[in-house]
Each structure stands twice: as structure tokens, then as C-alpha cells.
Amino acid sequence: MGRKGISQVSKVAAEGACLGCMKKPSNLRLIRGLCSSCYQAARRLVVNKKTTERELVRQGKMLSKANSGRPASNPITLSSRGL
Image (cartoon, rainbow, N blue to C red; front, side, top):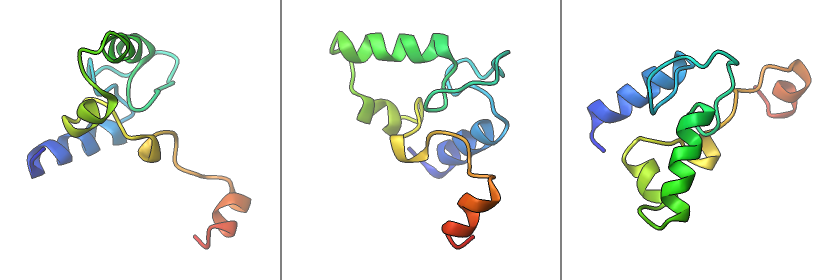
């Protein structure tokens, strides 16, 4: 994925939108950068051996496990990480 693709993924993720459909989910819950519908579609592709999670991450269609989830905001968590 080129520099433009990485910045697009970062922008969409920062806005809280789904990397698949580019919409903000109504329940505000994203799984690895995807709304529940897009995540289930991606999982079906992986289970049916049409692609791999690594390939989806490489293409910018899913966040890696290390990059998923909300950023920490709890003061205790932040202080324990030295932030």
C-alpha cells in the first residue's frame, strides 16, 4: 500500500468511519476498523480461504490487531504507559 493509501486509511480511521463502506456505524462500534457488516463479510472471505487477514491489512481493508480498538483515554492507563 502506498503513502496515499496509508493516509486514506488513517483519515477514515480517525473519523471513526468503517474502512469497508466508509460510513460511520450507528452504534459507533468498529472491529479492526470495520463495522459489524463489513467485518462479517471480511471474516467470511478469510474462512472460505478467498483471502487472508494479512492480505486485507496489507490492502488497507482492515486494521491489524495491534492497531485496532479505541485509543486509551483513562488517566490511570495513560500514566501507566508513561503518556
